[in-house]
Length: 411
Image (cartoon, rainbow, N blue to C red):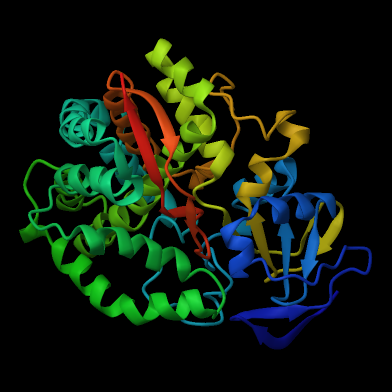
C-alpha cells in the first residue's frame, strides 16, 4: 500500500489492500444524513474496515473496531483534524481546537483545566438554576399542548441556561445554536452543507469571539474558572479564550440535539415515557439510551499517526479513518437488540460522547441539563405525541432534528 501526492479533501490518497471491501458510496449525501440508519447497517454488514474511494478514506462502523480507532490516541491522532482535512497538509479554516483537535501532551494540559471547570461538583452547583429554568420554559408549553419542540424547547433551554453557566453577559440564541452547526459541518467534505456553513462562519465566529472575551464575562461562571487557570499559569490567556469558545462549539448544539432527540424518542415509544414518569430516577439512564439510539455526533475522523493496522489490514501513516459512531451504537453484536429503545438498558460503552482521552469534556453538564428538562416534563405531561412528521437536519457530523411538532398531553 502506497500513499501518493494526490490529495482528496485535504488528505493524501493511497491504494488500499485488495482484501479490504470497497464501497462506492457518499456517507455525506443528504439523503443518508436525513436517515442514516440503513447506511449504518450496510456499513457494518460490509465488514470491520471499508474503503470509501469517493473520499480516499477508510470507514469503520462496528462497535469494537470503532471504539479501538476512536480511543487509541497513540495510533490514531486528533491533532491532524477530526474531519477529512489533514491539518499537517492544509491549513484549517480556523485555529484548531486545543482540546478537540489536540494530542498529548498539549491535550493533557487543556483537558485538565476543562475537566475541573466542568466537574460533577461544579455541575451539581448549577442544578438549581437548571431546574428553575426548565420549569419556567416547560410549564407554559405543557399548558399550550401543541408545540414545535426544536425551537420552543430543545433550543430554548440550552440557549437560556448555558450562557448563564459560562457567565456570558451577551446572548444571541441563534448564533449560539448556529456556531456549533457551522463547526460540525466544517469537518465534512466540500459539499453544499459545508459551503453554506462557511458562508456564515465569519459573522457568527466574530460574535462568538467577542462574546467570550474576558471583559464580557461575569466573575462567577465557567469562563471565569478557565481564565483563573490562566492567571495561575496553567495555560496562557490566549488558550483560555480558545477554551471558553470551545464551550460554545461543543456545549450548545449537541445539547440541543440531545434534548430534541429525547423528545422524539419518547414520542415514538410512549411506554418508555410511562416508565420514566413512574420512576424519575430513570432520567439519567434514559438519556444514555437516547444518546445510544440517536447518536447526536454521528461521524468523526481520526488520522493514522504511524503505519499501523485495523482489523488485521495494513493502514499507512496519514490515512483518514471515518468513525461512524452512530453505526457502532446500533451494532447488534454489542447491544443484542439495538433497534429497541429501552430506558432501563443502561448502555455502558456507547460512543455518543466519544471514548478515551477525547471523551466529551462537557458530558456532565449535558446530562445535568437533560435531567432538568425531563424532571420538569415528567410531572406535567402524561404523554408526548407526534403532531406531524419529524424533520431531521442534515449535517456533516451531527444527527439533529430541524423540526419536531409534538402534542404534550397534560397530566
